[in-house]
Image (cartoon, rainbow, N blue to C red):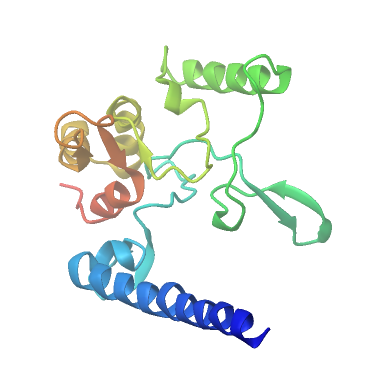
Amino acid sequence: MLNQIRPAIVMVVLLTILTGIAYPFAMTGITQGLLPGQANGSLIKRDDGTVIGSSLIGQNFTSETYFHGRISATSGADPNDPSTSIAMPYNAANSAGSNLGPTARALSDRVKGDVDALAAQGIRNPPADMVTSSASGLDPDISPANAELQVARVAAARNLPADQVRKLVQDATSGRLLGLIGEPRVNVLQLNMALDGLKAP
């Protein structure tokens, strides 16, 4: 009996050491050495070292002086009544999409309302990412077309020339990976940080 149990115990201990201790420590060491920024959450810091977010998680900008990110359908517990949920955009503790299908009346009404509101601002035929949420609810990026349609509003709110703000968007636009994979995109938090660095003429 002991001859049968001993190999099993040895294998459990050995595999625990290899897969539970050695492998995680090795991977942590390799990633910290090769990709420290990504390994530590792709954090974005101010010049003074203060962490203000991550390039991987969007933030809810609502002021007219900032570029706005994608709509976020995440929710969270109501601070006044923890038994109920309320809309809580970009809640990283509860990543989720709206789970509404293309035939859902609630989704259709919400998108139509957003399209009508944009039309009242002179924005017609907005890109899809301007009126839809991402699957995670945490998308940190918007399309260059989305950013371009916000240039006039942000420039007016900050009393800046539109061309100066547009140049900032162009500089903040990332292309396709290796020129083939993905779509061009603009990280909203990084763009708004650069925007805060501009001075009115």
